[in-house]
Image (tube, rainbow, N blue to C red; front, side, top):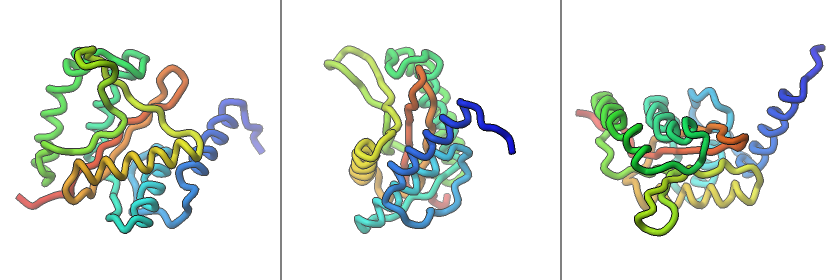
Length: 188
């Protein structure tokens, strides 16, 4: 039997803590998730359990949207900082975001004038021009706060929420996330 090194042990321990905090509600997993990141699957499972408990529709993971969440978190990863200058962010993201939205539209998604982007927001007084990404929850209290934030934000921002995608990245040794929820595909 192979002996586990410290990094493998910490990775498995961290995954277990997140699994307990986010998926503590229990329940069967939702529709198959093609994400390779276990944290994303755990977040989706916990979010869907929370939504079921509230009588709300479940979300399905949409691999086609993952490119957009990866793009949205990339300036933070590139800078190695959970806070970036909004102008720099726009330069890195806006043109490519329009291309991705058009590609998704061509695949049958609505054009998203309104969609819910969690984990991405302005900080400081108006005019400071800073954006931040949020920490991925690592304990039960943070997990419950995250679930409430996600569910309330989704229902306020998206008509007929259906598709979910999320990117979690390490920045400065801690995990941060950006998630995206949009309505379901439409026929053209």
